[in-house]
Image: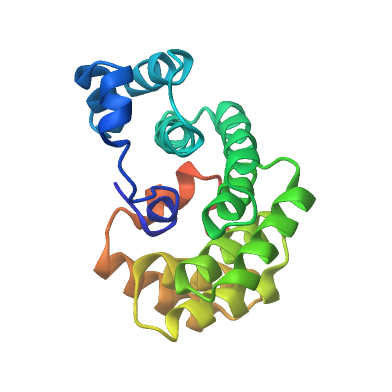
Amino acid sequence: MRNLILTLLVSSAALGAASARAQSPEVVEGCRDHLNPDRVAACTRLIDGGNLDDGQLAQALDWRLTARIDAKDYVGAIADADRYATLQPDTVLSHVMRCMTRAFAGRELEVADRACEAALALSKDPALYTARGFLRLKQGRNAEAWFDFDQALREGTADQPLYGRGIASLRLGRTPEGQADLVAALQIEPGVAQTFADWGIRPPSP
């Protein structure tokens, strides 16, 4: 499932004609296509093939990072996020990449925290509050997680911030409120519980 947080990790720029000349169109499309089961390998061929300028290399790293997250290769995704950040420093995308790859992995959470803060300093996009809320759940900072998901929901109802706010409420002992959010989130997207479970976050046991 393509989800709100991962949408932040997919930039809209195309590699363009220069990369098509440097690499075969099949390699470029294989890296771009999120349905390609060999996407990581295709992106690696594209990245290692050379003849990409910094912008094109950053785009290819973006695509491979997303493929690695889909494959739950979070260590590889962290490496791609850090390399991307050297090419595109101090952008919302570079910061959220460094935040979320570490949050998914459950490691270097202080680095993730600084990266999420840097992203929110540049933009107040609701998805960034959802991203930081997820990190806060990983850190056990449940009141702050609740605040972030609630901020995201001020721009409209969505399954992930609802589900995240519900988990935060349950952890804080606000059971009726939390259960209501979980039910509402599942009505919007039945797969949201599995998405959070895949990321290592589940509602607390009754």
